[in-house]
Image (cartoon, rainbow, N blue to C red):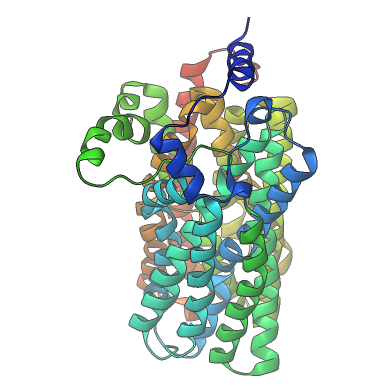
Length: 464
């Protein structure tokens, strides 16, 4: 009998047993959470959850990614506008976008703990308030880099970290056979949102002719979308309330075991995947943050450059879905992840340096965006397939936290290299050191994750 069958039998036996008085802990949890937020019981904990409810959760998670991560991927449009306005050089402004992205990694473990304690709905509503307030308050700081770091960087960043945590792992709780496709669909919201907000932001600049009002409008749009999406969310895992005082000390060992499983570092597969994906994040935001500036440097208009960024983000969305589908049906998650990283490296080193006209630049944006998007959607499935679903929340939070250095330093390093070689005004040649940096780091990431794949199995054509 399989482990799943054993668990199902246990759950069925429990559900038919005579009812007993609930423990104090169970009573507290039932009082803290509304009926519609209680985890499914019995067979519903596995595959028999009503399909329409599962898809409703999936659409809600998609919308949260559409707005919150879409705002991150469209930051390059704001960055280009601020550079043209003379606020600061690109190397300085890249830190705003880097802070915005890094908050997702830095707050991964605290966000996971809060979601586990209070449920995804409450935390998503808090994240929604921060994501909506960030751009609105940033509209009053368009002449202050420090003000933009606080509002767009920290405030928006913490909010999108909460929304990311609420939506990132729910698909794995509602889907089993099509887990990668479901996850890819949710993650595609980031790419589609990035494309939509890139085009919308560029159009708002033209129609409003005001950077502050563009910030305010974007913040209001995000709030209108996120509030109903947050109200739909329903967690499936048992609540694990935060403990204080003596009870907290008593449960310290249990929490550490579940949330900080340091024995994973004895597994070389985990170490290689951790190092490889953490390094892969360094160049990940270089294209979306710098494509608008690069397009202008080769003679394109600001509007056309925003279309290039939108194409990158749409390709990213398509890649998240297609690689998820391919992982489920053909290659497996880990094999697909290696292919993604390899193609990111190849497109960066062999296409972008020669993309000095519109056609080659479109080709680079499509290929690189497609593969970079696939990387994000494949990581949860890769961790589940290699280490098991039971360890996914803890490992996923740890992996995401490791991205903080890459998120925070990756794009600014490219910005410093760009400034060191003359800045955007010097044309496409000034970008090549930053391009080669991004491509070289991607090669290292590919080799590390490829090494993990070799440890899992030496059979080249095996689905992993």
